[in-house]
Amino acid sequence: MPQEPLVSIGFIAKRTGNAVSLIRYYANQEIIPSVRTPGGSRVFPRSVIRRVSFILIAQNMGYSLDEIRQLLNALPDNRTPTKDDWTSLSEVFNQRIEQRIAELTQLKSSLAGCIGCGCLSLDKCRLYNKEDNIATKGAGARFLLDDRPNL
Amino acid sequence: MPQEPLVSIGFIAKRTGNAVSLIRYYANQEIIPSVRTPGGSRVFPRSVIRRVSFILIAQNMGYSLDEIRQLLNALPDNRTPTKDDWTSLSEVFNQRIEQRIAELTQLKSSLAGCIGCGCLSLDKCRLYNKEDNIATKGAGARFLLDDRPNL
DNA sequence: TTAATATCTAAAGCTAACTTTAGATCAAGA
DNA sequence: TCTTGATCTAAAGTTAGCTTTAGATATTAA
Image (cartoon, rainbow over all chains, first blue to last red; front, side, top):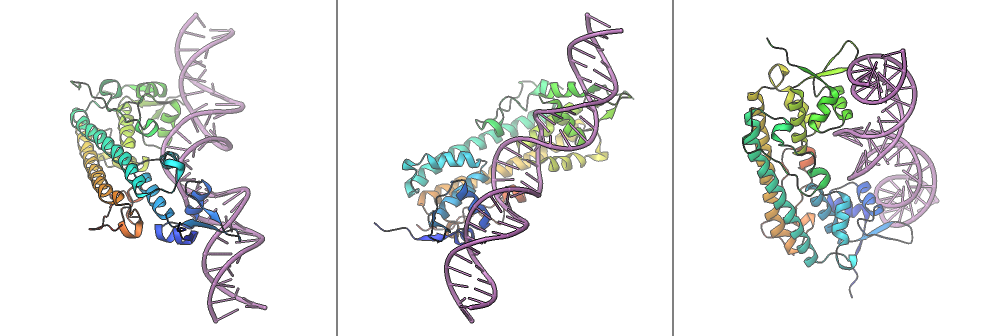
């Protein structure tokens, strides 16, 4: 079986457009795999470039590093992701994207109906629902709107 | 001219569903207005409830406190926002929402075309474009996709 | 009057996701 | 061999957006 070529931390950094310190950080966090040379330097499978790309995209979508770690750990045998793995991960992504789009669409219509009326107060409109927050719950914020918002 | 009724910090906290410490924090940051009683306690115009609601919604949309401060400072005379002010602010919101939806839609199609092909590497796909980042630039990330992504 | 509750300030603490610093060591080229 | 340049570690610093703490004062209710 062919060995994946191993590359240096600087190589990964350059290829992904990030600082060396970030790659080292990820390696320390064990969110990307690495092995050591006899001299003590980290070396990485080339596929780590893909893995870092994935991390960056996921972060941009609002996933925390912990969540991303979970996504990646969910891969069978925690192996280096294959083409099929990426495909199934992208399906998870797609769901999240669609969910977020739905949330934003809902917010948009809520704003149209609610801020426009000038009543932006929590007890009346509940446009913002504190109990079920995007940022903390991740389960999808609910932006509630009364049927007939009052002035 | 009728005086707006002034309310305590605890009242604002309860009505907006937040901790007193948060309201105090916002007051210290001068993102919400307040005056002092002879005894030294802060009191707030009731309209601060709306202002806090606005802040919470905007944060949920990804605005930083600094950006929110700017949005609110842009109001004429930095006055307590009127119904019309809220309306025009909501238009700014709507633009942001639409922009973000467009970004996510773009990302979705990029994922379909790119992660599926298994080539998720920055130099080839540029699915993630480091130079023009949502989080830092706010100007709208560009998720670029080559015409014919390579395996 | 007394006790409980609310508020105050200033400073420190917290979390995530990093970067920076300082000093050491390793590897490669002239 | 000497000198860069790359890498290492551990610890501290950074930013945003808060909360917590500690001790003081104020306000309200009984």
